[in-house]
Image (cartoon, rainbow, N blue to C red; front, side, top):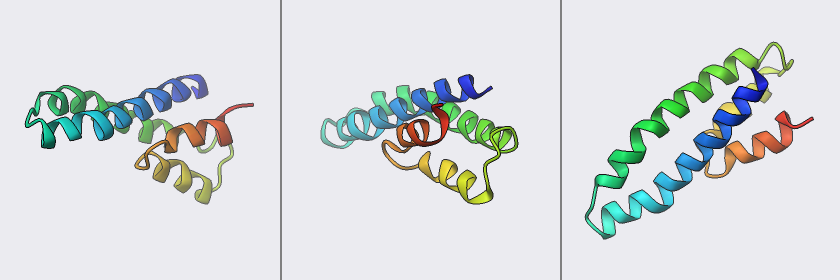
Length: 91
């Protein structure tokens, strides 16, 4: 399950960066909402799967409540999921 979480974490991070730094500026400066609509749903699904998998991994990975909190908060920060992969998932 850790391998699946790493893949979801990577994809969620990429989708967030694309949404934040490409689709949103195009929406507001180019007045074209299509990219936000195209990337929004996959990102939302990946975000929910990330949260569920993180909670499921708490016990097998022996994460404390604080560590789980860091893993969850990282999902809303740009580049946060990449930090989590480096710090907590690679071994």
